[in-house]
Image (tube, rainbow, N blue to C red; front, side, top):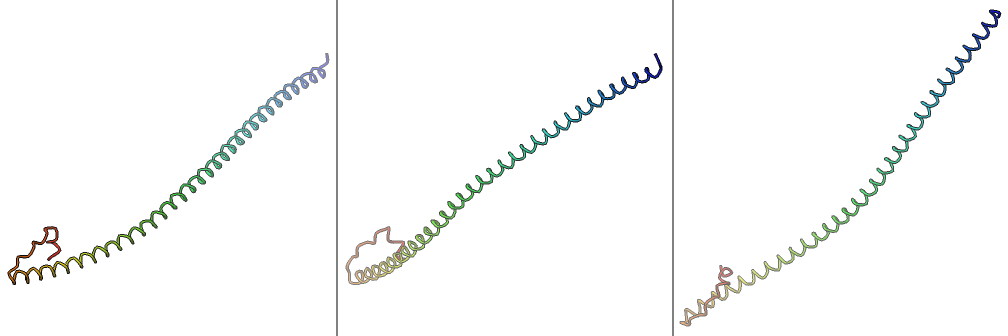
Length: 133
């Protein structure tokens, strides 16, 4: 055979080997690209799921916060009402104490008059003694 034929056969074999090698490299590159694309898609889906979960968590947090704020506002209003009631009752008690002290001053004065006229007055009950000062 002629050396030209051998050269053509060698060239054909080398071209076949090169074509097979190139096809294998392209498949490997395509597989790597597909894996990277799939990984990116999975990461994007996970990120989207994480964002969705954060939004749900934020919505729940805001709902709880609003409910607690409403409770706090209600309690503040109730505290204001109770303070007003305590102040009113305090004024009422002070008024009664003032009247009791005035009454005890009159009782003591009347007891002195009775004693001056020789009549023994009734003793003042022990629970009223602090108000007679």
